[in-house]
Length: 385
Image (cartoon, rainbow, N blue to C red; front, side, top):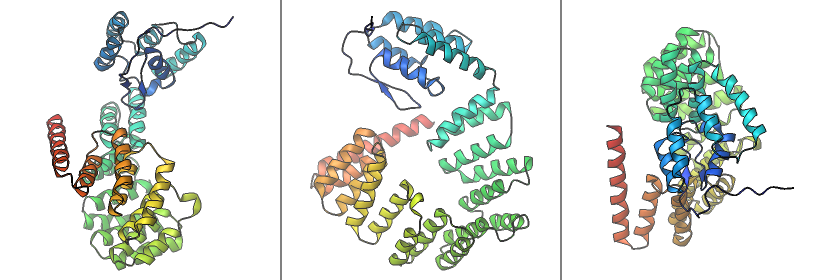
């Protein structure tokens, strides 16, 4: 006979717990247990944390919260996690047994491998700061090319290209024949503004890879950043003559946008093959249409992007901006409301909301939002101290 499982907490709860890595919100202990079971690698920082325990207490489950607190003293992670998942009879025993076997294998891995796994998750999510924290810890256990490369990539996401270049240089000492590391090192040097050093590195790499399209592209990057857009365009086209790469086309289109040859810029974008017309393509296409003054086409492109990824606050914010610029304040307000629902404290979304309020003639709301943004910046700054 089928058995009905009742939630351990029978009272209604409107306050969710949001897992730090996955961003998933749960409203009951059962939901939390299920999420941890199926996403255990991404929930290891949560299940024993003070915020999670307080949330469980808020459900009225004081005895469960006390048991979770006791688990914090368990030195063996596998034992603590399995004990946590077994606090109720909600999860199937066969699933728990399968996870226990998986955890046993995982615990035999080196500490740096576990930390790298966490860092890789955040790097894939383009959260350089969180990723770098894990890579830095992993590098204390072992220094290898994968860790140094990924740490450098996370630093580039953080905007610290100079330090990233140092990491790539250290990685190259371990694998001097790794051509991709050479390319990464050159790119970081360019982003850091070390143009002379980057040219020397390009010349060095050219000895290993004669007439390589990536080296032509990187030479183009130097010219682009020095505002020599025609020369940069020549180099990007030279790279494209050897190899098709959508990134080369995006940069070529940027050159034409800088010299206000909008038709050429859009033609370059249209050369991106259909299979590569992803989110990046739609954002770039929308940006070019907006800059050239064709807001209806810009809105059409960004709407396709939103349709593909409707949970991204940044896309809704851009959509709101285009509607505002097109004097459609009703649709602008609808889009920014959606953005702020997804990310209530996002500075870019708040700033766009302020601009919409100003366009609506609501000056006090405009000033209040700007004050809120300033306070948020102060709060974030204090956290960094």
